[in-house]
Image (cartoon, rainbow, N blue to C red; front, side):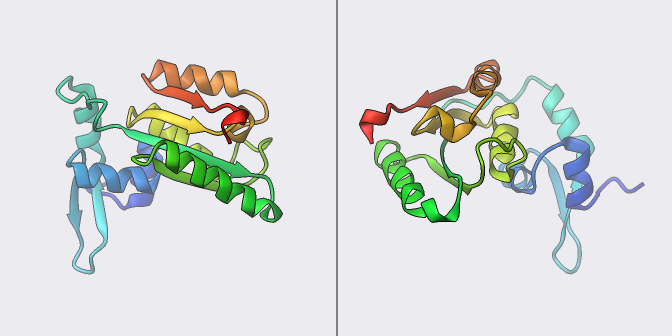
Amino acid sequence: MSKYVPARIAQEKLGVSLRTLLRWDEAGKIETIRTPNGQRRYNVESVLNYSTSSEYHPSPSEKAILLYARVSSPAQKPELERQADFLLTRFPQGELVKEIASGLNFKRKKLRDLLERVLTGDVSMVVVCHKDRLARFGVELIQWLCERQGCQLVVLQQSDL
């Protein structure tokens, strides 16, 4: 097998999203080449070697602040926008993640992407308007995962909205 693999294979081997691969490429955390027609190929071994070395520890200023807003249905889109506006006024430097999906569903794409980023250590803080915006059940587990990665989970009070 070639040293450089397509994004799909790199995602499977590393257990990360395409967005994470692109961020790692921009940050120089993974060796990447381009094919003649512009497609990226990734050297998975370079990441595995990089992550086992103790050279890189992102400072809190390099880590992202993720602002997560969620509603259950498209009919609640105005509420989603209110959450997003409120989060951005409180944390203007944050990266907004909006999702329309059930809080009971743990297979939500954006929630999984958020958790992947937390687990890779790329996130210093996750901010939500209400605890149930993250998940209906199991928020304590998500909070524990965040704490294990040095990430703070901030739940703003309902009275703040």
